[in-house]
Image (cartoon, rainbow, N blue to C red; front, side):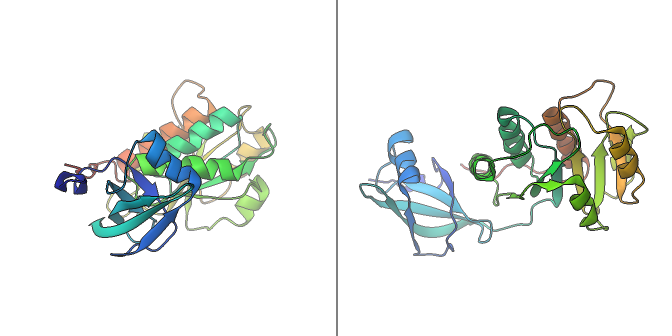
Length: 259
């Protein structure tokens, strides 16, 4: 039997696509039913948390387990939906293990949109978007996010810049050429109402010189440096996102209370 404490302390959070409202029933597929029953060892009546990126977070209970599915009953809201920081990450695809890690950490750090970008020195020409989206969902479930970041199809650098919204500032993590320290660049923007921004990182071999020159000439681009060491592509992205969140994002907030 579930007890009263299970309403306050939930073992799992799941992202679902369905609308969340009191009394709604959610049918889980075989993989997620297996996760609840065999990995977390939950049983009928146990409480979990659900979110869909639109309706906030809701408490729900496991109504029943079938042979290859599970049914949940939505109970009461636990957190209202709130806007996430408006921060994009444009990155050149890197090797599979590293790009999986990058998407996971960028989700944890609150990136709202991720765009794989092909540059002249990009070695990895294709990415598995389904796998990356699965990593983003798992990271959002584990880190108390109320949404899951958008992950776009791969685009060329030329197309990215041609379609770029000019009101969104682009912080270019440049390993060469003139660049101001990232902290100095961030300090120029108002913390109370920062502009729409994005971070961009290059491939494992770095940008081609002509790409850096072309990017630096664009009025919405600010080349920034991350210190005297040459960082790996995935490390550079995480460092830049963390700095942005600390200065202009929601780095001063605290995780929601669960007890």
